[in-house]
Amino acid sequence: MPDSVLEPSRRTPVIAHPDVLVVGGGAAGLAAAVAAARSGAHTLLIERHGFLGGTLSAVTLGTLCGGYRVEGEGGRVHALVGGFYAHLVAALRAQGATLPPRRWLRNVSVPYDPIALREQADRLTAAAGVRVLLHCLLTSVQVDGDRVACAFVEHKGGRAAIRPKMVIDTTGDADLCARAGAGFDIGDDGSTQFASTMVRLGGVDIERFLSITRAQRLERLEQAAADGHALPRTSAGLQVHPGTGVVHANITRIREPDGSSPDLLDPWSLSAAEAEGRRQASLYEHVLREYMPGFEHARLVDMGAQLGVRESRLVHGDRQLTEAAVRGCLKPADTIACCAWPMEQHGKGSGTTWDWLPAGDWYGIPYGCLTVRGFDNLLVAGRNLSAEHVAQSSARVAATCMAMGEAAGTAAALAATTGCRAREVDVAGLRATLANAGALLQPGEPALAGAGVDWVEG
Image: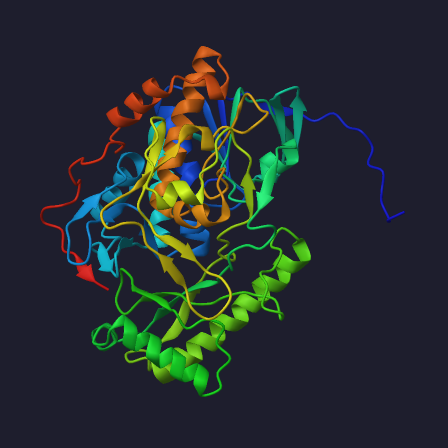
């Protein structure tokens, strides 16, 4: 028998009875909590860090991706995600915490300051009336039939319980769903996309750096690898950031010695991966100074507080976003979020695979991808949605996660108000409510940020 300890039973205080409990304050969780509160629901958002933003602020993602669609090479760019995402970008822009959207390859993304995003997350949740509990870790779940009856947490005051009407899992790793006994897959039969440690470098001569093309940057890193530097990745995501001489680097790749993806749901493997990410960050700092124009005097000035995880658990929902649906740009009648991001796969080898959708087209994520199979009051949003491995590699980007979160939060508020099950929410009414809040759900809608925007090739 494995070594174990029998814990004594205890009586746990209930600290809240929210209409909607949102677990995880990242891109999807922020949008979900604000949407639920704006819809009139008493909303509690819990987050394990001391700040909100999740991957956007704890990992320092670098750019907000997925908010636009591009008609083709040299073609027009249109907004694809509105609502909460558009409000957040506007707030960051007003603070001087973004750069103009950057067009690169067939993608468009918005560089942002992750510290400013933490501040805006505080402002947006407070303005909506969201109750926020930071440094709060979900530990276990009590299930009563088809409902999540209670969530147990640990915080600085000890152990506590929360009794919600509706629950939204926006943890990224589907931690609540797993503890509740919901079904899930892990990547592609256990193989997931590789994680990355994200860093920011200061002291960069931006003009010199921008004097070479993306292809030339790749050539320099491939030369470094040929010269004997053990670089796990040469397809560098180097993005100029707000601030003088600052570049964000999405450049590391964490893998096992045999080339496989680590099991980042295993605490020992995750711990080793975090250390490996820091080792690689130092390696790339040295290589960039030697090989990349403009980086001669660059230094690491910031590193993500945690590893950037692209994929882990994929929850079993009432519907599943399939690879075929993404490739076919299907637009189901119950679409609650739109996406045109390519299938971006960080797999074996030193490159990144960009599997593009047809130029200018997009697909819709159906509401059923957010409702958890077998549960009446549980929704998911973000990268742990119900999706196939390849489909998730497109849908996991920030703007799309916010759109999913906004839909989940609005739906949870509707269900809490009417007393219906999550899957019984009137989707037509849900879509109308989202549209009234500025969400973009129909093809051919005009761009929100068209005229007057400087599209920068980056």
